[in-house]
Image (cartoon, rainbow, N blue to C red):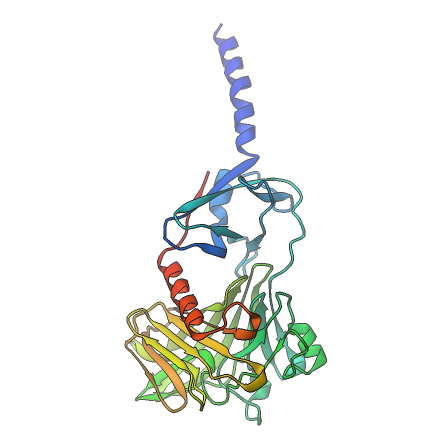
Length: 376
C-alpha cells in the first residue's frame, strides 16, 4: 500500500515540476507617480535561471500577459561570455504593474534601436546612437589636428532609424539629408557632458581616448569602454576608463567614469556643457544635481538641448565664459556614475526649453524611483 502511495505522489508531483521548469513569470512594479514609457527593465539573469533553470537562450520569448504579444528583449553580457542581465523594453503606468511570461518559443525579429562602433575611416571616431539621438567621442588620430576636440559631440536626429553608418558613408554629416545632421560644436571644452579633473581651479583635460572595447551592441542597449592614457592633472597622475551605455528610447547616456590616481583622498571633477555666444536657457539645480541648457537657435539647423544629471552630490554649479559646469568629487578607482545627453527640437518630441527641463526632471525622478522586479 505504501508503494502505491509513493507511485501516486510521483505521478502527481513530476508533471508540476516539469511545468515549473518551462515558464517563468516576471512582475514589474512601478510604485511611483510617474508613467514609464519605453523604459528598459533590467533583470539579473541568475534570478531568471533560478525560476526557469531549463531555459534555452536560443528558444524563448517574453510575452506580455495582458496583451499576449511578444515584448522586445536583449541578453546583456557587459563584455563577459556569460549572460549578465535580461533587458526588456516596455511601458509601465504610474502606480501599476506589468506581468510578463518567459516561455519556450521563437522570438520575433525586433528592430535594433541602439548601435555603436569604432570608426577608423574618420580618424578614430567612436560613435553611438539610439532611436532618438547620436553621439561621438574623438580618438588618437585626431589629436593635435585642426579639428581636435575634448568633449562629447552630438549628432541630432529626426528619425527612429539608425543612421551612423549612412552618414559616415556619405561623408556629409554636416548636411541634413532629411534625418538630421552634426551641427554641434565642441572645440576645446567638455562639449555635451564630458568630465575632467578640476585641480587648483583649473579643468585638467586628458588627451583623446586611445583604446576602445564594445561590451554590448543592441538591440536595446549598447555599451562600450573608452580608455585614456595617463596625464598630468595639475600635479596628479590620472588615468581614465569611461563605460558608456545608451538605452533605446532615452535621450541620455549612462556614464561610469573611473579615475585611477596617486592620491589617498578624493579629487574634484567637473561635468561640463559648452556654452554658446548668443543667449540660451540655463538651469543650474545644485540640490538635484541637474545641469540643463537649451541652446540658442542655429538658423535653419534648429535648437539643441543638452543636459547632465549627477548621482553624487554637487559641490557647486556655475557658468564661465565657455561652459556650464557642475563640480563633484571622485574617489580613486571607484566609478562615478552620471547621465548626459541631448535632444533636438526638429525631432518634434522636445521642442522648447520647458519641455527639455521637464524631461531632465522626469528622468531624475525615475532614477530616484526604480522599478521593482520580481521573478517567480
